[in-house]
Image (cartoon, rainbow, N blue to C red):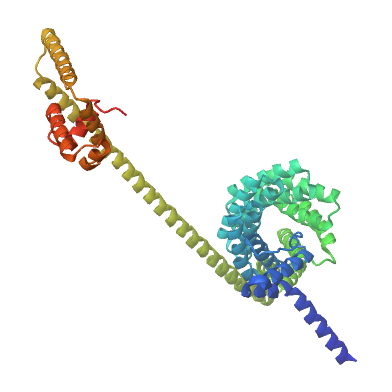
Length: 500
């Protein structure tokens, strides 16, 4: 009986795993096929993505084009995100991004940038996460979509807060809060207000943080969101502690624990116990501190949160050092081990961020140098052009000045005489043209010569001999003062002797 149960249980798990990997398998098949088969596989993948609420229904694509490819890659990246398979997000998300840029699909561009930013954030690459979230925000601004813009701003604020760029985080979260107030979405507004409280606490401005976290708690209370209420109470306790209102902080934490009790929110519960342990230590309630810190150690180990566990181990070592120094040393050793791990991870992250910033600064510096060189070359070319223009202008002025000196001075009498001479010359030429007296036959031959006929053709046309034609042409040459037929034709056209 037990064997049968185990067999069917294994089959059930295998079925679940197969279902979980449906989109992964379809995507790998899609990448390795072409033509109609690729279209069919792509449509199957999009149907499965719709069933898993990853995308809206798109219908079926009849042809494989950029739009289909964009949606297939995006669905694959979204599914990898759902399964927390971080390393499988970047490749399909980048492919979807390329196609969305080609298709000028701003909404898809924003979604791809957010996916890539979230993947970098999960891998601890906060610098590149911020870069992607910034690009996503720019796409959302172009769409003028307040919902998307608010989400982008919240992501940016969280990432800037995690890198201690708190002023930048404040700027973004205040924009997000303004958008949410206009959209009247109390659940989203509470999230933005909670982020603002954390930012002002980081800025060491607890008085500024308190109104934000108080309003966030009230909104979650009205909306009957108990887990969110517990988170807000924990945040408010941190603000009270910074304001040295320790009793208020303790009351908030105990209220939060009463909500978290029996839930799966292990990490949040461990954080509350750490906060209570710190308050108990301050009041020298060592037994109470041991209990709180002990609970925090156990819960943080369950959820694998080494940062929360390290704080709990340090606090527990402090609480035990008087009554149980050996156990205190054990917890202190655990704290040192965890701190070394956290330090190594933080150093690796900071080194990665430094390298990325260095590369970016190098690129910007190189671009700036190239821009300056380009500007210098442009300025130099303009100066050379101006100098050449000045040289040409001066040369022209010099030429005009010396040319005028070389010209003889003409008196009015000389000018009238020159004009009269020119007029007489034109009249003489006109009289000479009128004096050319051609016979009717010579005029006929002249006209035919101008039409390009040869002597033989002219003779046949006029029914005379070729010799007679030559004789007439000789007389025409003599009267017109030319030596051959070519000169005669030019002379005739120039002086209007040819009639069309």
